[in-house]
View 1 (cartoon, rainbow, N blue to C red):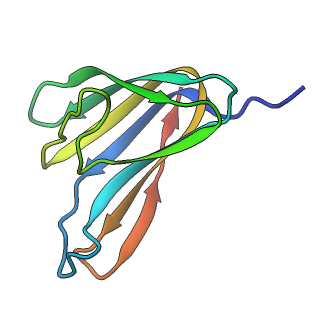
View 2 (cartoon, rainbow, N blue to C red; view 1 turned 120 degrees about the vertical axis):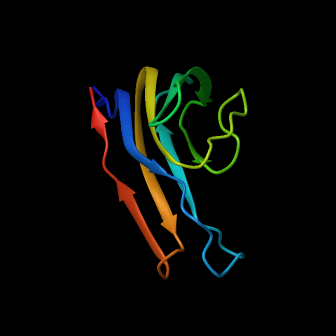
Length: 122
């Protein structure tokens, strides 16, 4: 029997799109990486929460079976092509099957830095 890897619910709570710094060849950005190890597609609902505006709920994302995707958060996301505005935000993922997900930031404001933020799985 194969192990089930991943979770169906994730919350990334430290979204804040960074500036570009001095080198435009590698702009600052955040990204969300999702791996679907399953033999069937994963269908994910995405909710975005803000500190100063109403949430955007019910965005759709499909991760093909046995694939990984990387979503740049500074570009339009999901099937709806939603553009996240500047400022603090959080991302909630609700998948119909277990997936593995992480969230990272390339911050060019203070030299070159990349780190992966933690997540909360429910």
